[in-house]
Image (cartoon, rainbow, N blue to C red; front, side):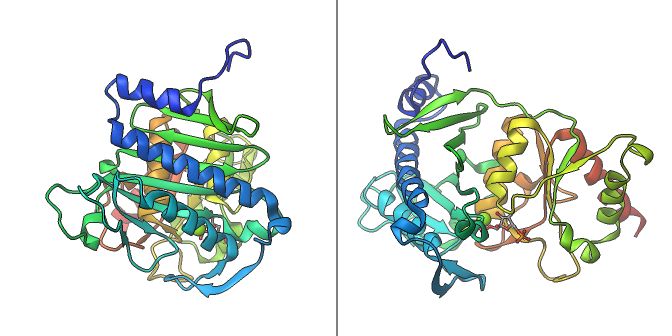
Length: 341
Ligand SMILES: O=P(O)(O)OC[C@H]1O[C@](O)(COP(=O)(O)O)[C@@H](O)[C@@H]1O
Ligand SMILES: [Mg+2]
Ligand SMILES: [Mg+2]
């Protein structure tokens, strides 16, 4: 950002996107509502122990994960903010078994909002970055009663996606299909200001992000790929790689958008029935849209994630995303292994 130039606010950015024909007024207002909810979540995260928001909620979600107080609170904030906006037909969330239809919406809103209200839950109580991830789909036309099948659209159908990272500063990263742009929350003004237009992920990298403690459970192409990275200068790759793992996808993806890298959560043998840990509709799809719009790539090891046709609301998927050449290489290793098996 040119420091001499005053950054523009998210509101103005969205009006300009509308004028350019990239979004309509409904989508603009919907994104504003989500951004407002993220500001409220940011305040709650910031208060930490002083706000009484740390610790377990004592409940579990549909995926069998223990919910933190902040998981539940963030979910409520997003739901409440969107209830009266008039732009949405329904929401789906990591923290809700089923989707939620917006009550009394007439005429029915045009969009569906899917979100991971608080990503990186294990980081909440230790004061490390967490985030919110969201994806916006069109509600199919003529729908009178929402059903799960209406949410089961491929990532390529997304009209907007974004995340907010609650780190040393709070940042909103957004795409409406015309580049990926970053906004920083100015707490004095109470608004998100555009601090980086058109983020670009370098095609090559020397940094990878993976939970290495799962190594013994990986399949051969993953073992082969990571062995090469660990061998560094002396190995086939001829260069040293560094490793970073925030354990919050938002934190790891934000680093990759800023300076490149590859993020991997592969399918493994620990739970062969689970195709990876991350959820397709509200984690992998929005992050893939954001990363592709910044010149990166995203696959499940074989297929472009945004082309996967979902079959379940909380479907899991393996994720390889970030610097293009690195994602293509590891995807090729998986394709070669599939061919020879
Ligand atoms: O516990 P692990 O294996 O390090 O996994 C961390 C991954 O799980 C997640 O925390 C899952 O997200 P939730 O906290 O929303 O369930 C990712 O953000 C992160 O990349
Ligand atoms: Mg998550
Ligand atoms: Mg979560």
